[in-house]
Amino acid sequence: MEKERTDHSEEVADLCARVAARLIDSITRTAQIASSATPEMRELMQQWIDLIGKEILNRVNTGEEIAVEEIARSIGITPSSLLSILLALQRGGQTSITHVRCVPGSGHNEDLCHCMMED
Image 1 (cartoon, one colour):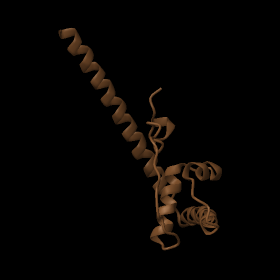
Image 2 (cartoon, one colour; image 1 turned 120 degrees about the horizontal axis):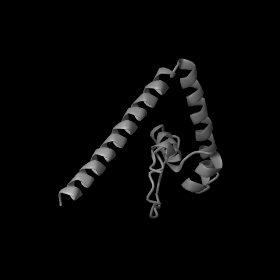
Image 3 (cartoon, helix red, strand yellow; image 1 turned 45 degrees about the vertical axis):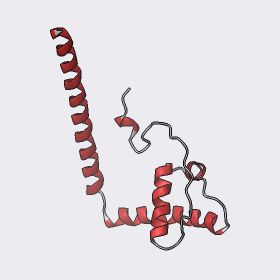
């Protein structure tokens, strides 16, 4: 019984250490990105988002249904990023989201960098 507790405690301690290491890594990366957010970088990012927004609006204006996963893949972004841009377009009054159809997910958090995943 004592051996089981020791093993379980070691597992918990190891898990906590990995979580802490990932948090520190994430904070460090965020700080690095924030420190490089110069006006020029912000402008480039806005131009990129505007280009993707125009691509989405072109499809909306032709009456094409927005197949999130398919369009995201064709543009080279994640479905979450495409949805974020769609919401920004709606907030800006450039489009109106009238319906959403959902299916079961993959069970993987696509917003997590692969570097944060367990091997």
